[in-house]
Image 1 (cartoon, one colour):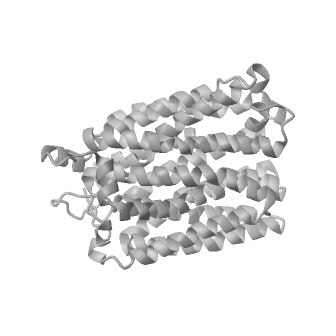
Image 2: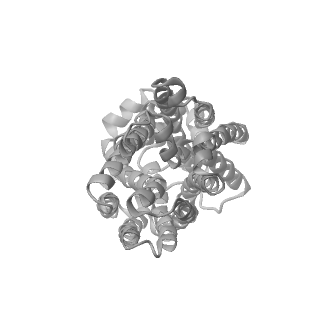
Length: 441
């Protein structure tokens, strides 16, 4: 199984620091990713008002929220479709083209959600339209995230790919921070009646505008040197890229899906869902819950960079091991504090967000798992199928478990996925060091 790790780079690549061109690529790619990821995740921050507005008034509150989480999960189920199609063309025609298309496909449905009629106006058509827009969002994000990781990794110099991928992941999490801050501002400055009346529309309308800004930003990016070299040498995959992934790289697919499970649990449960869980299960005030979430999202942005720096110094396997174990410890500490009244909620949530930054290691593991001609397809298939399975089920499962199995159930779930990543990290440490992260531009 030593073939799991393969070079990202051309043989001529050399060790060097990030130059001006590299920094420009990272900034533009990360900012565009932040705006697109905001569009995708802001939905969950407004799960409570959406559950009241898009379903009959006599629906039990817990069931309405479960139905909204189901619509949220539909975006994850749609990800493989978008990811597989965009990755196919990304491996055949270029990374940049698909990198731009995904943002455009995200902006349109996000803007549309902000304009949708509610159940009181059009009845059952309201949740159906919401579901349709969420599916289109899922198709867009399915091509965005894997394509973004491949794009920055293939631009980065050797010895800097861990940090480059982490910068992009940090940029994506900035989108979560923007969504969290937006939700916090709206909940603080508007009354509950105003939020239900019109305030919930604001983040989606802003998100649509953000998305079109991201499309414009990506005009200034260039194709990756790795893909350009493959095209020049006529070394692009001649057979269907996905078929080659499934027939020759099953080990890389399994490894990538395993670590993606922890990524989905950490982001969904600890960052996206915890504000609602803290309110419903532990009685934390909405203002405090969203303030804590903003601190956690900021910590996540910084944590991704810290773990990316660590990858370039000790390797992805050791960084993943350290990060997974730390995540288990801080998750239980946070939930234990919430169960005891939340005295240290803000500080522990900020620390938890920082340690969730261990997810910044995961893209480097996946980028190194597939050879360049099928890299986009390999990552996209493994990541999006895993996210469809785990991401789609997590939101509904956690909502149910928190209601039925006790408030500590979400912590147990996150810990279980982190243990899986510990096993993966230990296995990866058996890979010869010379094969680990030989990545370059």
